[in-house]
Image 1 (spheres, rainbow, N blue to C red):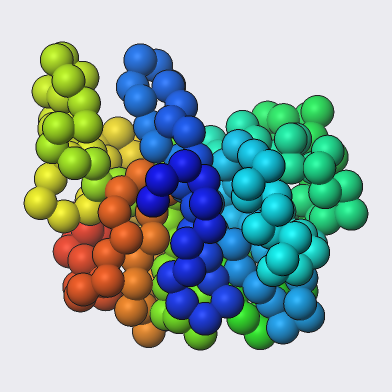
Image 2 (cartoon, rainbow, N blue to C red):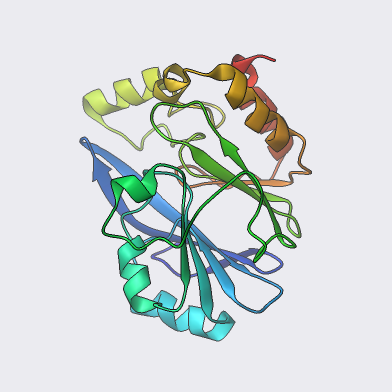
Length: 233
C-alpha cells in the first residue's frame, strides 16, 4: 500500500500503512487497522500518523469511536488521534498508562473483549513478557488475527549493513513470520504465555496481520502454530 490510504481487507475491516519510524537505529514500518462495528462506530487498532487523506476517508466510513494501543510500544500516534477525535475512547495494553501518563486513557485492555466490540472481536492478552504485554485481536467476520510486535516478518533486504545481520540473528527476517529472539528471551513466565497463545491458536484464523510484516492470507493458522512452536505445551 502506498502512503496511508485505507485498503479494504474484508467485511468492515481496512488497513493503512503509515510512515516508517526508527527505534535504536532500526527502521520499522507502521500499520494500523480500522474496523467498523455494528454500532456504526470505528475502532482504530495501533494508529499510525494521522494525515488529511486518511481522516477524509474515515469520515466516509463512520465516526471514530475507539482508539486502541495493543501493547506498550505502539503509542506514538495515540495523542495525535485523541486530539483529532476527542469523543473517542482510548484503550491501552497493560503497562502503557503508567508509561504514558500524558495520555488520558479511558480503559486498560483485559482478557475479555470490551462490550463495545464483543460482537465483532475476540481478544486475549499474551502475558509473561518483560518487554510488553500484547493484546491480540480476532476480527470474526474476516477471520483476521491482529499482532503488533510478537510476530514479525521483514523482507530480506529491508535492513542493510550490520542491522541486516542483527535482524537475521534476531529472527526478524526469515521464510515465515516469527517471534523475534529478543521477545522469546523476554518471556520469563512461559506458562502464562502458553495460556494466551493457546487461545489464539484455537481461533478460526484465515488471515494474519502484523504491524511489521506482510499480510498472510495462505495457511495463516499454520503460520501461527509454527511461529509459537518453540513455546512448547
